[in-house]
Image (cartoon, rainbow, N blue to C red; front, side, top):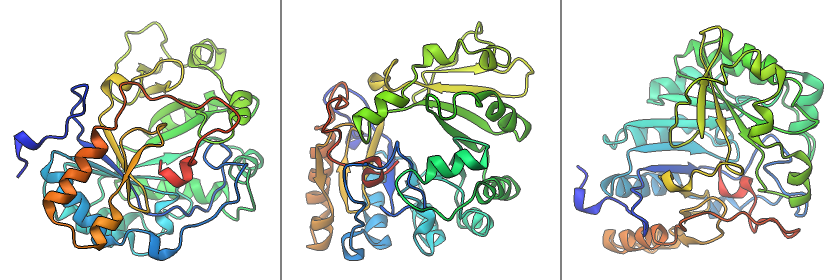
Amino acid sequence: MTDNNAILTDKFGRALNYLRVSVTDRCNHRCSYCTSGKEEYSQKARTDILSYDEIRRTVTLMAKLGITKVRLTGGEPLIRKDLDQLVTMIKDIGTIEDLTMTTNAALLKPMARKLKAAGLDRVNISLDTLREDRFKDIVGARGVVTATLKDVLDGIEAAIEADLTPIKLNAVIMRTINDDELGDIIDYASERGARLRFIECMPMSDSSEWKRLYMPMEEVLKLPQITSRVDTSAVAIKDRAAAYTLPLKNGNGTVGFVSPMSNRFCDSCNRLRLTSDGRLRACLPSDKDVDIRDALRTNATEQELIELIRKAVLMKPEVGEYNYDDDSRGRSMLQIGG
């Protein structure tokens, strides 16, 4: 059971109950907004990556401190073998109310039913385009990628059939790349009962790349393909993730507009991130984190681990500051975990 006196609370009074766990830094895609063009893509040695037992121990302890929601991320989490075993291990903790996964879905089709049976509640799936030629340009921006758009779409259908629902589809808006097909993506999601979220491009790789691709949500909301489908005059529903969610004019669903750059939501952030190499990070754009892995591997006591976790929590800034200069981030999104 959770000790109410132990709930993780940062210096600004925000209760943190949501942990994103990166299970690998490897990915079968090389999207420009996730990987850095200024560094060679170097994978961590397998010995540097947390084992499933180490992840289970960490999540179990953090559940005692108030974590009730866990999302598995990567890299691409489905690259990690036997991921359904980790799902079962986390589900068996008993107090995780929402166990989800973010994936690009290219490897999801053969795993969907197995993950559902293991206890995974639902999935978030990246879908930035519905056009095969653009798909290759987007996901292969930093290298050769063998996955196809059909693999992704088949994965989405498999998730629906396996009842990993409600499915959320995440589309990063990139100027001159996919900003002319936002309406098509809305229609695709609506037809499948999926919850769509458009996300502003963030400076998590090269700053110059971000500046070229960035499109503020205020501009997006004025596009004819949006206004013809979305009731932009409606009262927005606000939550911790999306700055606002608006209904579709046809009544078949909603669209979330996540604006981490133009309309920050740091005041309601409830997240912590555990990287695949065992560093606990309290703020996505901040490079400050705490090493948990070494403590796990040197038989640290539960109290010692709790102190490290609380140290990471106290590093959480009131407002996350993205780096806008040409040096960009110390670690790319691929290394941090989505």
